[in-house]
Image (cartoon, rainbow, N blue to C red; front, side, top):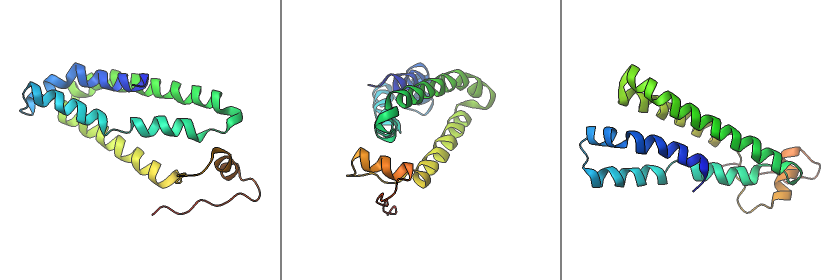
Length: 140
């Protein structure tokens, strides 16, 4: 499991019992919900995107910068959760984080083109605006 994802899971393991028990779940429901929420988040998409988005000549530097940003975001998430929870409650905290996730999902959908079945070299030509670069199809 990627390291950045462990930081997000830290929130679940530290606060899951309080959150899910407050919602009426028993211990089996708590663990089931941890697995479900870990499986459907954006973490897999982000790690695939990191591997594909950078051109070969700057991939190492780009991945390092991106992963550092993920770690910083994980720190912000872990640091702010107790503060937001104390200020507006658990429901409010999850509402805030849900809104942030929705906005980022919308941004990703609107700004990142589909790259399915395209080689990295072709995508590099498209994103750098090289001449004779094929165009990406519109999202369906």
